[in-house]
Length: 151
Image (cartoon, rainbow, N blue to C red; front, side):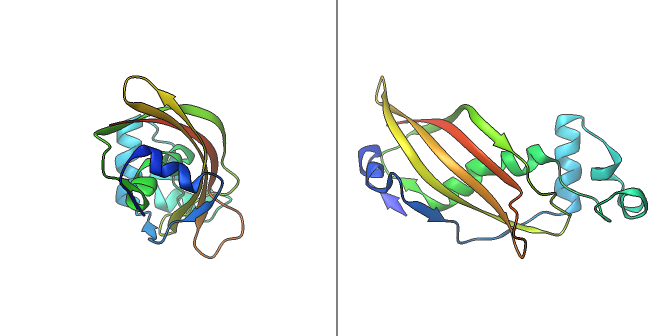
């Protein structure tokens, strides 16, 4: 979806926007996330041990990995032409209802809940986000995220 300016984004407040593109979670990406965060728990980084001892039967992505993909998913779906930059402002609520086995595919559905002016020349946007796992009923992540966008 493309918008000329932040003000035009207000036209979708309250409307769910479904992500169209699936993103595959690979062991390489999980390992890179482990290196970046220094979280090397074996359920994420040791496929053999995870197959033998994990209740999930395979290595799983970090919960925060699925959360960290939300800005990518939004950016892949929404483009505001006048926006010069955007930054993460925070989170109001986050839950990880389902594990994400390596090899799963994810996509995000989101709703713009509110848009407030954020001087100078910016907006504070609250997003309701649901990170879906292909073929699973329960999502990987449900979050209320707040971001700033500047023109």
